[in-house]
Amino acid sequence: MRGFAASGAGVSETGRVRETNEDRVLVLDHAGRGTALYAVADGLGGHAAGNVASDLAVTTLHEEVPVLVAQRVSPPEALVLGFRQANAVIHGRGGSPDRSGMATTCTAVLIDGADGTVAHVGDSRAYLIRGREVRQLTTDHSLAAELVRHGGLTPADAGAHAQRHVLTRALGTADDVQIDVITVPLRVGDTLVLVTDGLYSAVPAEEMAGVIRSTADAQDTCSRLVGLANARGGLDNASVVIIRLRPRWLVQITRILVPAAVALLLGVGAGLYRVEHSYFLGERGGRVVVMQGVPAQVLGVPLFSLVRVTPVPVTRIAPAYRAHLLRGIPARSPEDAETLLRDLLEHP
Ligand code: MN
Image (cartoon, rainbow, N blue to C red; front, side, top):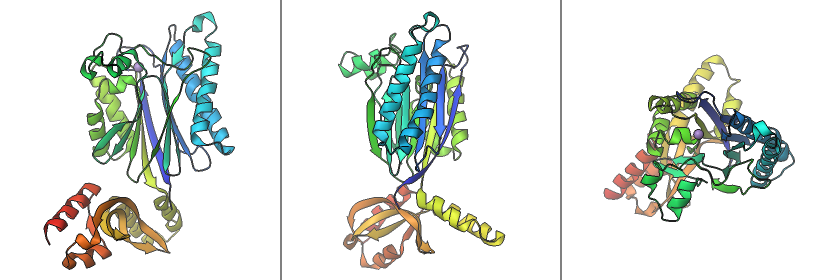
């Protein structure tokens, strides 16, 4: 039972200095054939043309990508075709004098099964948060980032560089555009984050991850992050999309069990909460593994899924604990499970 049910939330705000919001977000949990589509776009161009460009980017993706997915076009190709179409539409409209030079950044992710595919142009960003790790998946297409890559600028200086907002790539500036495409294999518990520069310039990635880990509801998390950007001056439009991944089996079992009687339902509800918030150490293929869920099955459906196979063979666990391990040793979190494993190895 591979695959994830993605659920996203997004917030986009004008901030305290700009008059209009030229950022746009797209949150589409159901993009067809079990896929989900999310995007942020940050428009630029005078005379309010920026919000036309970012609007065209997200609406084009919204219209085109699900059609391509329905035609079984692969996720990387569907995103590239969607981006090219958006680029053509924006570049075409940019021909009129009042819209001249309009363009937009765009960072989008298409989730299909257990893979997330990111397509990216400009200086908005995608991050992957996995346990304690925060990984930036995208590279900024900005002058400052180019200077850092070529050794002319330190990352610390880049944040204050006068030309940090000058883009080297954007949708709509020419009739062709180079698009970065990154595919990442996803795991249970991963969170994907899309942000525009107004958000990440005000809230560093580690702090962003801290807020995401400590707030349960994704919509609340988005509001808190945008609130932080505003509290620190709100110098730019700020936008964030947060995508949480739940294992599909958990969603399926919810569907199987929900029609049960009310009393049973209450019990199951508590049970599912426990399943989603429980972890345990177990065994698979002779190695110690970290699982999410509880070590049991209902109607033949396992109530757990694999988080991580550790390199530790079961034979390294003292015989006194091995039987417990085979039945599943409960833990509060994946980190707690790792600590538990270290304790087990230290107590032969
Ligand atoms: Mn911006």
